[in-house]
Image (tube, rainbow, N blue to C red; front, side, top):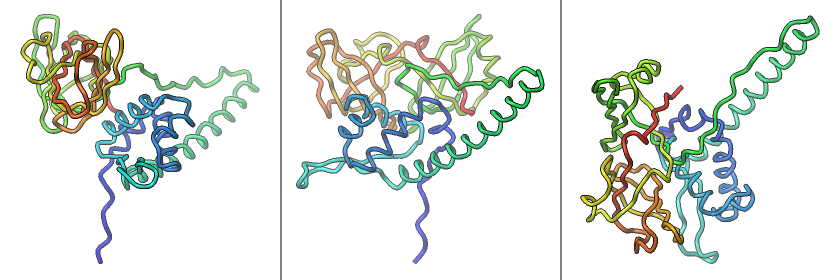
Length: 263
């Protein structure tokens, strides 16, 4: 019987950021407990934050990492997929390698300082508060005066545009077909019913289906799966009436989309 192939996980994207450490921790805890809520409690985050961490990590990995289990004696739960287990294995290997490298350079720094030399400077990864991190590729670049309009393509062919300065485009070395990350704050994303897409603010309009809705006095927070399979979070008007399963349109201005390179 032929050996099954491992899912194609984008390890470098999923594990290339310092903030991935907390997401990996939550994924590992889900594997141990079989519960999102329990994993959140053990990681010191809310149930909603735990799901958001898994959504973002799934976006970056490009494959499903957790699947819901419905019913049963415990009323359901969550299970780490084969791809998720592969990711955890790679994360463990990277952590061991990182520890070895840091130990070696720490020893070198100690030797250098003993010899009167300045310590080695290391570049620390930057964490970001932007909850929406969407892997994509540059499709076209259009010069508009001092602004470059970068048209991006998400999974499934969904289009997204970002307006950045000429200097930023040059410093990033943007070119067609270059893999990048599109980042934006959840607060920059307006959510409404897909039937009302024409009435939403101008900008990128991404269609999807709500997966979770958290009611609020000033706004309803909506997490949704886009048509291409990526997860995105934004805010709708309070008492929006949206619920899990609702078809939604998520709008974000082009100037709110930040482009980051994938190492």
